[in-house]
Image (cartoon, rainbow, N blue to C red):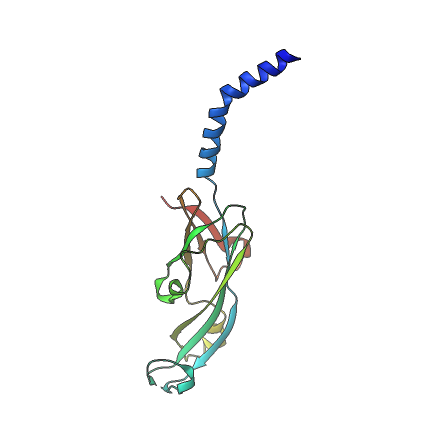
Length: 174
């Protein structure tokens, strides 16, 4: 039995450095997967004309009819690996990047929710009608993040995709 113990220690000493190198290599490729969900909270029509003071907008007169979509974007980390430096890359015009905290990591199996508003032109045509409220005006959102080793990944979220399983596309930034 002592020979077996001596043999085991010799094997452990030989493989020890390789095991720690293997762990470092694996850790470098651990990809957090951030799933996105974005339900519409409120969609309403804003007619042209004066803007009431209680709406808090900086301009005093609306030139054309507008539509306002209010969304809540929930980001969920579906892995054990913490995601760092979350940021919205596309589209930039949502101003969502201003409320996302770039310094706060998203731990494994945790979620964070951001509320934001998009304002666009309202289509008065009969064909457009109420359907304008059903679709997000942006085709996709790209959220980038890093793992603990600094490797960058992204989630491409397609809010108008009918098949829920195809709404989140994952990849690594080259």
